[in-house]
Amino acid sequence: QVQLVESGGGLVQSGGSLRLSCAASGSIFSIYIAGWYRQVPGKQRELVAAITSGGTTNYADSVKGRFTISRDNTKATVALQMNSLKPEDTAVYYCNLLRLSVPISNYWGQGTQVTVSS
Image 1 (cartoon, rainbow, N blue to C red):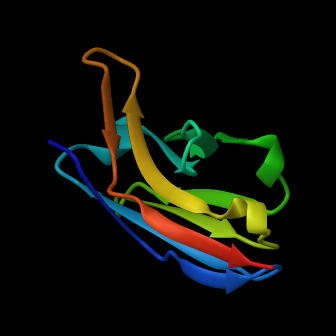
Image 2 (cartoon, rainbow, N blue to C red):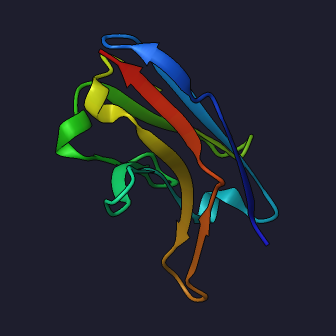
């Protein structure tokens, strides 16, 4: 069973920066696509950024140029550097590991709150 522990959320002013980190344990980290999602009350959870084991990245249009996802397969960690934060980035952010090969597996962290004040 994979366990994900997130850290780094908090309160920041508009234009500021935060770095989220996620540490994984319990499985071979490199077989998973790692990602960050976010959710606000009343809305569906949405993909913010994802990164494959080989380093290919994908970003939501709303965060391109401001957020950077990275991973360290040797330490089993994934990070999200968030710059130029906006109030609309306020959400609970979730770390995710997804395995697309059989057995398909999908794991979530507990979530960390990010609040951006105007």
